[in-house]
Image (cartoon, rainbow, N blue to C red):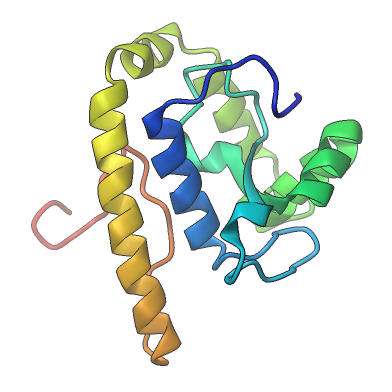
Length: 165
């Protein structure tokens, strides 16, 4: 679980990272510092390393952290796990079980998901580029005091609309 390692970053990683950071409203999800004016100080932290292609682009596998908090979480995996639970659900988060964490771990073990991600980086990139644009519009709505949907929809999960519910 280290960042800045030898895992090559591609264009899909860039768009995915933009989505995660926009969804958190350009704030570190640990210390809550605002990075709206300097977004390069905010990083997309993967709970399970980006080297695991099956969950590399899974929004439930990512947090928006400043460099200091990202480094802290990498050095203290229990703190990383507890923060993940606070954000995505778990014993200390939104529910009383670790169902969300267990589901993420099951997805991580899926070889089919990994192969799909490796073979479809361009399509995944296009999805998250569109998601990033949508989130930018949602942030504008929120700035005007309107309701906004800041959830990041996975490339494998479509948002529910009247036409596809």
